[in-house]
Image (tube, rainbow, N blue to C red; front, side, top):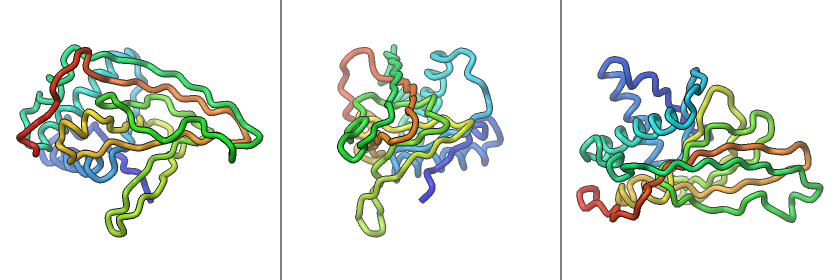
Length: 198
């Protein structure tokens, strides 16, 4: 089972290519709740580019849901951006402990900019539509990609069309795992309920 990969460079191309990328984004949000973004740029202005990328994704998600292009972005007006660095050391008995138990993220869109390039351990729960069975999907280390997972607030805004992603971190016996995640969420409390999507 392959995690979806979306090449956002197509969003600035011809309309047919833009529509293709938006359809891929829609399917990944609806069916998976997490996906990879292919990128070949170095992130020079880290936080500014993170917010810009999140806003581009939010615009596409809004349009795919039949909402005004700025709906999700406006919901996150004056966003709060948090950064989390984590290090999970090697463990002689990984069968007894988790690096991080299974959970969802309360933020709107979580952009995992730096996943460890050698040590895996990040797993996401995916519902198999054909069998209605859940299966853990390992996120294998990748280069030149940004990993995105959908948070609780996007599921609420979309009326359940887009799925929040349940995930966990396993630890292993060899090497330590490093990660750096950015969380984009509203700075203030707002009512995110959207009747149009429901």
